[in-house]
Length: 326
Image 1 (cartoon, one colour):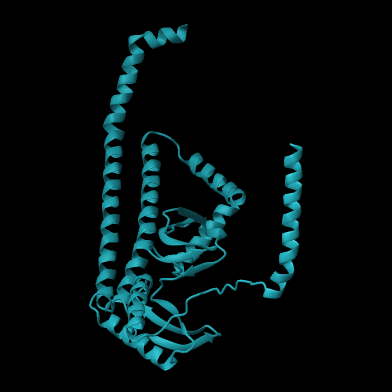
Image 2: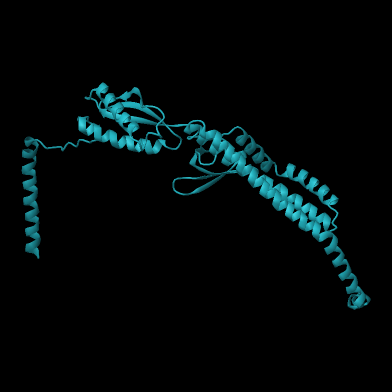
């Protein structure tokens, strides 16, 4: 009751008002200044990232298209992580400075954070492993945003690369998330350049040298097309006869393309090659199956006819008997 009476007294609220005004006069400007400095630092961080990105893009344009794409992918990946890390550091510093202005002793908080961090380091070993693996994966430039990769047997386009996880989206639109520490196999199909391998099967009777000439001519026409000229890095390389059997001869060829362009170029090349084979009369093997109908000999049919007749007569007799009995 005495405490309640003190709260209802005028002097109590006068002291509260006095302390609030004193804090507003001394601490509020400092808090506002801290927030303004935080916004300025965020602007500087974004501006610095944009300048670095523009500088890297300018350097990439001075080289070939392949170099420009590689620099663009790497800059997007690294600058995205740099922005996120910088924002986290800035806001943590702002929170600590604001607490100091509010009169909170942050020394126990810092000490406690150190102890908690040590405990987390021992308890969350999997998280630490993910972060370390992600750091070295980015440092060694294994994958970037927009790459088509196969991670632990699952393929897709890289949509997110972080210090803890990697996110892929496959051709069906399904999103797959992998922890960096649990990535045991990584295959990048679009790093620096890509390639499409063709195994072209033709009938065994066809002239293999003629088939190879037609394949080179079709690839040359495709490379001369302005729609695919920039996507193809080198002319078609015919590797030779890969295999043959009693039905087909398989000719293997390879075409080198820009990253992620190999599938589009491959589809167009197959379409043109089919039309060229039809125009030159080159036959492609088609799977078929031969069915033989078994036929009885005349002797076996003659031997079987009396028996069938007798059985028919017997059946008729039995039917007659049944009918008479009825």
